Image (tube, rainbow, N blue to C red; front, side):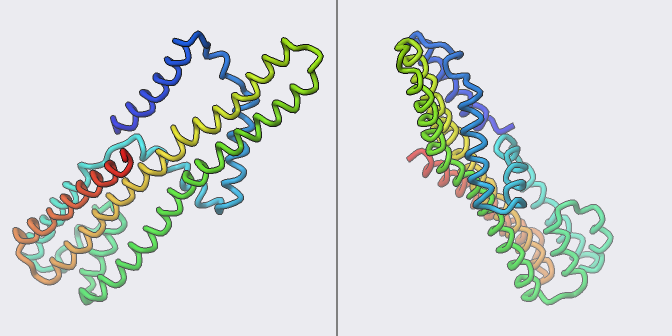
Length: 261
């Protein structure tokens, strides 16, 4: 589990709800199903109008990434590439053909397959760079889904509040009911602003970090496979690829610093 994500959402909820309770409020005051339906469905509809259904569903599936950590995979991938380099040095690149079935990662499998088939290193770089660029474009759209939701949600919340006030105006003869109705009407605004700033926008930011980390690992894989094909010493290769892991950590730190600012 990604402890930062779990602690973040927990701290935010505890702080907001705790502050409300300390001021004499109650959770029941903000548990309004009607307001939740207006904000969630309104925001979801606006996002669906902006993005294709495939991108929308891909974004929903990637929410799990926000709460999981896969940092160990990068080190395992590096070790696997070094293992391939040692084997290729002893038995030739063609000997790696028997390792293809046990490679689960599609990007690495495709790059290694091209290398085993004797494709020129420059051609491999060109082919796999195209795949990297296409993947990065899709991942950018996925993060944009949550950014768009973060933009629409507060506005839809205001729309829900206005709808609630319209209903309140129909009961001006009962001042007690008017007061309660106004309070209920503004719950939609709370949902809209809360979801945008505590859920949608943080998810978008975290996915961008995760996607960049994955891209750096793929760049490392490509450089590793090409270097094997070019006959680089396995020990030199390991030192070279370690710089990609340092870059991934540095990129994560830079993204975290930007989010704090």
